[in-house]
Length: 269
Ligand SMILES: Cc1cc2nc3c(=O)[nH]c(=O)nc-3n(C[C@H](O)[C@H](O)[C@H](O)COP(=O)(O)O)c2cc1C
Image: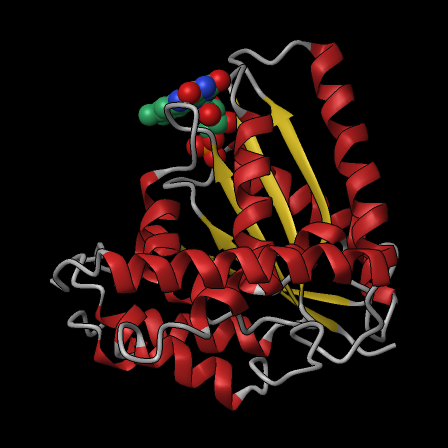
């Protein structure tokens, strides 16, 4: 089997619990299949906070006024077989570094592109918030196009009691086994209901946004996602019940956006 390239997007500002958990994951994966880990430390990246101009959404990410590592980071994600999104819980959420990263790639929510790639979600916390952070990262990675290949939330209070150390090890081992199985699987996977609803909801909206958000509209059109009969972002079998539900969602989204644009268009700032 080919060596799988794993890119860790590291949201911790230090080599602490989150890094150790990632290294533990790496050790466990290495026993299962050939993997090459690369760490992208967001604390060291030249990645400025979003300025909020919306240009990436409407005119394209190449028009971003920040000229920094963002395009190189996207390239690295494309070159990897899987991306590990790793962050400690800070204030019940991801770290600032991780949030800046997500903000800078928000155009990917509108123009998803990581289909066929796997995401693994990892968080560490003193006590609370790991469930919410995993749920949030799941939504982000999924809408960006990744398939979720595993996730784990590790509780590491100071000092970490012995029973938790054992429990954490087991949690990482379980998630690593799931990740390894997913990395071994090749070929397209059928989307779940949530994914199908996201596709149709966005299709309903972007089909109406040629003037307001031309970059989004152009991307969807060029991908063939606006064509009649296209059932999903990729050419995979779609459960007919999911498709029927998605079609209704699409109709409502298109109707709502059309109504908002015609009845109350407001100003574009
Ligand atoms: C600024 C800051 C905010 C934190 N917020 C939370 C929190 O909301 N909930 C929690 O349970 N732990 C919180 N923690 C604890 C960290 O999530 C925990 O120690 C984590 O394992 C640190 O990861 P690291 O060693 O990779 O930096 C916080 C720690 C810091 C430094």
